[in-house]
Length: 426
Image (cartoon, rainbow, N blue to C red; front, side, top):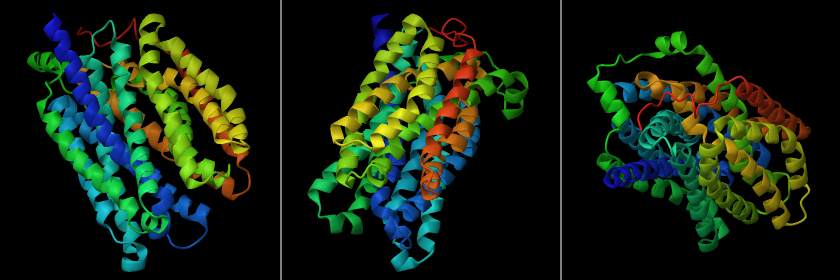
C-alpha cells in the first residue's frame, strides 16, 4: 500500500512538472510583452502596442479549443501519457520560433505574422495540455486527498508564470535596459524551449493512468464531441458557466495586472514585475491549502466563496490598486484577491474531472474549458485595454464582476462533485 502511495505521488508530481514547463512557455509571452511589443509593432504609443500584442494573446486562446478537441480525443483513445508528451513537444516548437524571429524593422509585416502563427501553435499545445494534465492528475490522486493533490495542477500552472517572471527579473537586473529591449527578451523563450525537452523526457517516464488502463481493458467506447454534447449537456454548461468568471478573474490578477500596474497605477516596469512575482508566490502557496480544505468541506462551498467574493471585491480592489501610493499596498490588495480566487483555482481541475466518465473525461474537461477560456480569459487583457483606450477603465471592473456573478449562479445549480464523483478509482 505504501509503495502504491509513493508511486501515485511520483506520478502526480511528474505530471505536474511537465505542466509547469508548458505554462512557463505560455506565460513568457505575457511576461515579456512590455519589451517585445515595440519590436513587432513599432507604431503607436505603449497602449496601442500592448493592445496589438494582447490581440495575438487572445488569438492564441482561440486555438486552444481546437487543441482541446484534437488532444482530448487523442488522450481518451491512446492514453493520457501520450497526449501529455505530444503537447509539450508542440509547445517547444512554438517557443523556439518566437525566440528566433526577427523584428518588424528587419522583415516587416512578416514578423507579427510569424509571431501570430507561433502563438497559434502554442495555443493548440496548451489546449491539449490542460485537459490531459487535469485528467491525469485527478485520476492518479486518491479519493481521500483528491482535492489536495489535484491542486498541484494550479500550483505548477502558477509556478510556470512565476518562473517566467523570475527569469524576467533576473534579466532586468543583469542586462542594460537597451539590451533587454533589443535582444534580452528572447532569452526566456529559448529557456522555455530547452525546458520543454526536459519535460518531454520526464513524461516518457510516468505511468499511464489506471483509470484509462481499466477502461481500455474493458473495451469502453471512446466517444467524440457529438456524444459529449448529446449525453452530457448539463455538465458542459456547468463547466462553461464557472470557467467564464474563473478565467477572466484569474487573468485579471495574473497576466493583465503586470500591465495595469505600469499603464494605469504608474509603477515602473521593474516594480510591476516584482509586485506580480510576490503576489503569484502567495497565490501558488494558497493552492494546496484550499485543495485540502475542499476535501473537508466539499467543492461547491469553495466555488461559491470564490465567485461570490470576486463579484463583490473586483471593483474595489482594482480601483484601490490603481490609486495605490506604494508597492506594498498594491501587494496586499492583490494577495487578498488571489487568496479568495484560490477557492476556485485549487479545485478547478478536479471538479471538471469529477463531472465526466472515464471514456470521455479528457474531452469533457478540455473542450468546454477551452471555449470559455478563449472567449473570456484570452480576451481579458484586450477588453481591459480597450476600455482604457476609450477612457472608461472602470467599465472593465463591471465586466469582470458580472462574469463572476454568472459563475456564482452556475455553481448554485451543480451537484457537490466530491460526493457525486465519476472518478470511481481510488
